[in-house]
Length: 580
Image: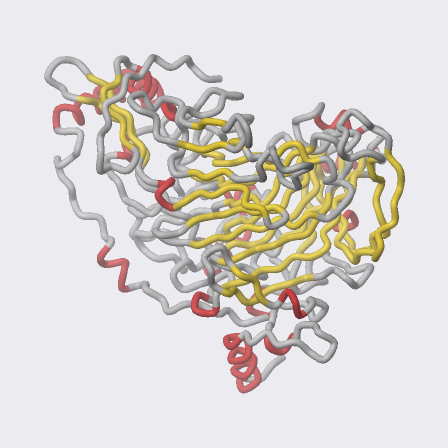
């Protein structure tokens, strides 16, 4: 235990974060509390796409074999011992599926430039890699399978309630299992929820919404979604939380990965999961490129222009897609496209992009990077091997509305989604190797088990003028709420983050903001007009909220649509076919 003077000294050292290198060219841990001493000096800083220098605030090189990451054994990570009841998962996560090893090499394709050539042979790496290994395998013991009600085991590690950060750069070097059916992932998750602990996430995942909008609150949340649990309309949201502040557990996916049996034609998805979802009018049909996107015939790169007139099926605005031109021989990152395989659940949008084909995901370590700036001027930018992949700007999360002409003298009737936040919650790091629904699902892994995901290193950086390190920042607190609701989060992690390293946070703006944000009684001043509001209430009573939303969203012809609330652009909407 540290005495107060020692705690103050360490806090000052961490606050300075002067990540110097020792004589061997590695991190001096005394000046970077969360940093691994094995991190090379070349990785102490990184240059962001905004031109600023970012300094290392967290790293793990996984160079020591045989680490135990079970709860209480590691200061940075917790390897879960829990069944995964999300996404129809057959997985039981166990600590024994997680360890650190020396990775000597990989089974590689003989001719990686020829997708039809499936021959493979083993190759040793020039230098063995110290790595975290997450193993997926089938449960052999029928009694154990019955006890946990699962058929496979896998590994998941989290920094939840240990290390969190708000904004900055995260980089992970990893390779993935060979074969169909596997679903490894690297992601960031808001600390107010806990990944795969569904009780903690109900009404929080993936909300990123901080507005008290009484008019919008009249519309239903598409099922199976739940109303926002911690709402900006609530003066008493729970222990330790600020009144009138909307909160959630947002999710940023650095990489969700799928591969093939021979390693040719693998893919990576990068995404933001966000609620509330935009009106169904904007959501394209599955397997359809959103309206407004065009493909260059020569380079195969995609670009976007706001469609003239009809904005149906146009999805989110102000997105940017990257990759290398098809004219580049054997590109490391092929041209990137919108992920039209999945737009998200009805209540939550998956704003994502896909990189395909990738022919060496199981052979070599690739570097995945996300640059995340919170706030109204913020963005999320994804990179693969230093190549730009995808960007979502804060303005992409602005207001989206669609209106229809109602009965005579009632005016237009609108459904809309208010502005959402660029994620501002403290985020933990999550990595796991699971099984997905694609490529034949779990059954297709037969003959490929055990499947193993390897992580060479994890590094996180922030600008020195924007340090926000820890899971309980003053403006977005989580500690008291979690302790008061520990039963929702499973076994408490040991040690907690502030027992390892003191938090470093910006100057708080609460509680001074809470008084200014107290909702005012809007009375009958609804933007739809009093007559339309009465019609909404009557319709809700007669039809039910879900039926009314469908009626409004699909009535024709639609006359108005807007993205940011400042403009209403005439459109010609065709009636939308029901979606399953």
